[in-house]
Image 1 (cartoon, one colour):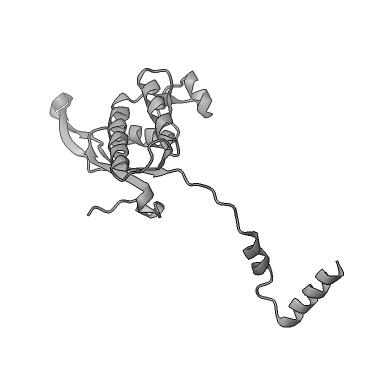
Image 2 (tube, one colour):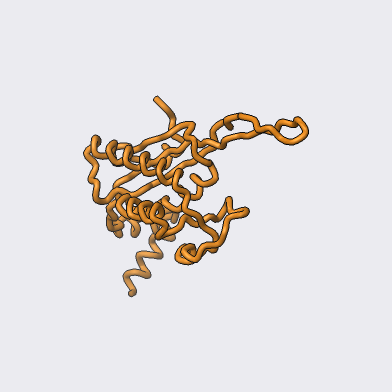
Length: 189
């Protein structure tokens, strides 16, 4: 079985669904920015966001790999100035999200409250070609593919903290005399 880079972040495998793509022919830098924008979103919200990106109604903010990226007024809602609409990367990530969603359905995980727990994007080996330049020279012409891992998880239900246990742990590490003093102070109050 394949080892996932982010498998450590999914402590309960019954409530998580995963999918991965390897050697995908889409730019690593664009895919990294798309993944950063989607990480932590609910799955339904991610689908609507990506469809808006495809229609150029919302932008993917470019934060790390932003050299030469133009400014976009749509990036203001993400507190950024630069952004793009990377259609090919969006197409690939949509396929992976759909695959992870069907994996969750196969595990009988509720579709309504799925969130994108983690997306890992890593560089794949560069595809080497060459281009011909003036004066008989040859330069490399490389592609920058990537590996992607998507982990969906059902939203955690918050449980109220046990106050009785907190009261016991407050006095742990005290000796007998200190405990007696605490009891006396509590009796006086």
